[in-house]
Length: 123
Picture 1 (spheres, rainbow, N blue to C red):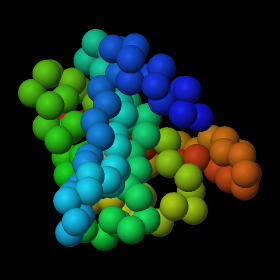
Picture 2 (tube, helix red, strand yellow):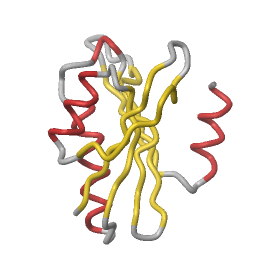
Picture 3 (tube, rainbow, N blue to C red):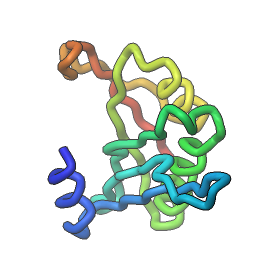
């Protein structure tokens, strides 16, 4: 919900970024966002999303790459995430960036019900 995202951004315990694009008329549009968290020497990707009209332009890659670079520089040993088993584009993005499957959470997601693939990237 909007309230949950506002709370997340205001809390200060998460690493969140919003990608803003400017269209031909000069209007600013939210193209995508990223939210992760670092706890000691581990980190977790909580959410990465790119608006449908802006997909396929490398924005998701840029958001993820920035987070991974900063986590590596901060001395994080591993980054974890869960992704819908049926989300082919996200799975491809994560594999391209060195994440490997480490397990499955059965029926983790709702609407529709779907398994989550747990993934890890070690530095």
